[in-house]
Image (cartoon, rainbow, N blue to C red; front, side):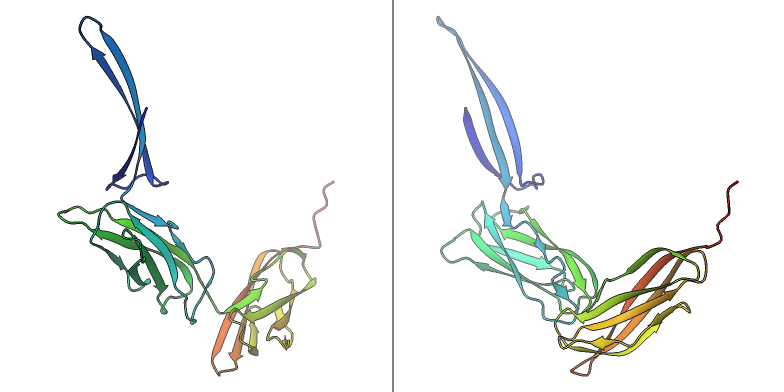
Length: 258
């Protein structure tokens, strides 16, 4: 059995390789005929390997803060004179540095844009090798993903109260804090519904604001409301967060089945 290890300029499968198998049958003629059966097996690897294969920021990005760089290692399986890296400026900036003592290995550094807004982070970084005499160089795609989070965090982020009897009153506590650890002061709290009231907020020494939300159920059926919390930071800037409230009103006068 002969094992081959090849590099491909065409994108392989999800694991970065293309397995292959070839059977060769050789037949000899003459006074002593013979037959030899070879089975060739191997894999075709990407011409450019990236590890880890993607940059996942999870929920580590908070809007309005400095975003730290993340790095991946790029390895070329073909001789190259250099690499070219490109990405959308709205996503961030990327740069490449050759690793000392490693002729075919590079470090790719990516810094997310400081103009990113709250929401999903999705995009790609393209890495293209500079090959002598090549008109169709392979291109490696490095996905970038994650979520840009707002600075204010409510715990819980949503109040799901379930079935509540019409005429009943339910009280729940919610804590509001800064994901960056900044101390906050509550300026105003407003319930966007006539059946929701919010008591005075208390702020702990660590800067966490605690609220008690009271819900007076008036109507049967699925209902929803929202509580808007406006805060001020120590440096004079302001922010706000919205806490959804959902419940299902259940009538006290249920029909009697004979």
